[in-house]
Image: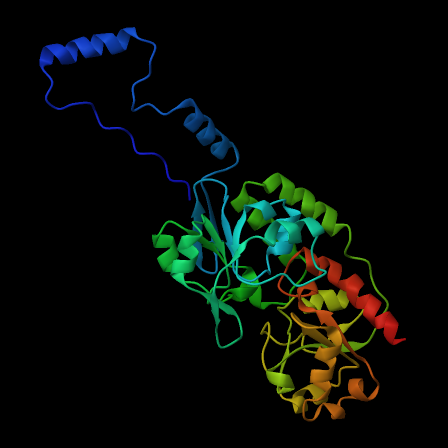
Length: 345
């Protein structure tokens, strides 16, 4: 948040009435503005902020987020919103990150811009996400932190004058509007929200218009599928349900998510439940390592041999970022997925 300079106090207290009158007359006759008047630069800045719609307040995960002026210094916890920041031309506003970038997802200029950024130290929470200390964040002097809700202390940061925005997929209590079946509207909402916080609403509308034209074509029916995240060496299998971006990405690629009837974005499931739904294709989502090691880890999990997708050798691996959470990479997801499906024959 912008901090306005304090106004200067009046000049000396011990001044005679005569001297004060003379000083007032002198000031009135001069062309110099009083010290308490805002400078031209400050006035211009305030006018520019007002023209861009600031101060701005948005609702986010049940909390209000207010910025007095466009965010200029951003701490990015995880890289989920990076595709949207990239599309809005705001990569240069990132002052600190918490994890290295996964190769092959972003423009070369983005990797170059962020390779010199400091990587804040983090700890892992129970679900494998990053948790960042308050001290690390304050040291980066941001005016906006973009982070999952359970990764930072929103109340403490807000009290320190730092706004916190949580991507909608990571709200601890998503509410009914985020618990229904996802569509690409989730992506457009994320882009527009970030555009508002960055003072780039016009750019956001153009990004949405361009991206909207790339989705919507009806793909041939490719059968049923399940998207799984594999962790703990293959012992934990986590399907993605209806509220996740897996569902619209699958649909745009011609697949039907067998877990689309679930009201949870992601959850753990046993192999027996997955077998009972009998997905014709298994799509493994990964955020590190390589696709083959992801497939190998899954195939080594107990009981997966009972899946028809395994017997028919219809197991593929797709970078997690091409599905969930909602971003411009989700828009690229159907084409990436279709390419992998074509390779299966």
